[in-house]
Image (cartoon, rainbow, N blue to C red; front, top):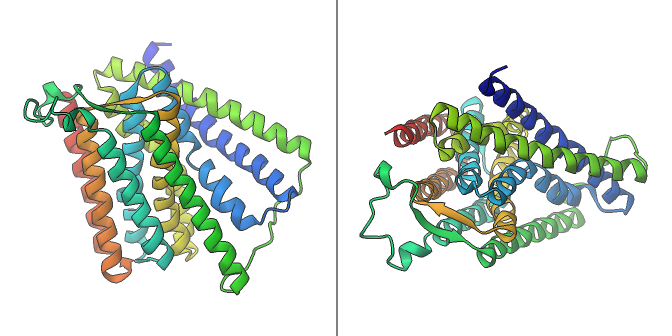
Length: 342
């Protein structure tokens, strides 16, 4: 078996471990939460919300600890771009997506603030005058030059904003239940013992850990063998692989007429990717940002604000805007490939 084939197989095994590990971890955590009488809506807004971003977290944390900063950042950037352009684009192409007040007034603004903050935090060398005016970030030869570093303090700021978002969402949901505007749904999942729930958490965490290592290690091997940059691998193979659960969940939700779930899933995942994934990664090990990653972050900020504007204009995202989003992703990928091989 060649090194390349082995790397591809182990990469796929890593994705399976990440997705199934996150699923088992969330099941175990949710079971324990319910045993302590925590409402299912709170479980959904916290444990499940974090659980959906555990694959991205495992990859970015593992990459940051191994010094592969390009994968750590491009995984999140690529996942966010894929979520908001492809997942949301496909969902809107299938059916015009209405935007709820919560998503419009709470989720989208927080998502925009987080990605803009992450971009600003990645520009400390630019602000210090060490880069700007001397380096053109659009030239391929300058792609790997460092534009800045997201340190532990910046990571903590991102994480605290994410925690504040969860608290606001939970308080809002509990108030809505109390007012009768929404009802608390009973869980139809089979009761699992405390011991089994703890075992689920341990097994899930182990699968996530090893899955993250498999993905990072073998993505680097594939990049070297194909002559691709770590940034391009992170933006494409890794980001799409870790975002597939969001794609499936959103398409199933829109097919069932659950527009809020589909849109909330996409925006919520992007919030968790920046606030939780990058926040925790930077706290554990500060993440350096290259010039090409900075350009991608700026593009992500522009894309997020553009989709926010689409949503705010008529409280919906129509099929044409969904089509434009998918075309936009194609253009972004073309640009990324050109930059990587130029």
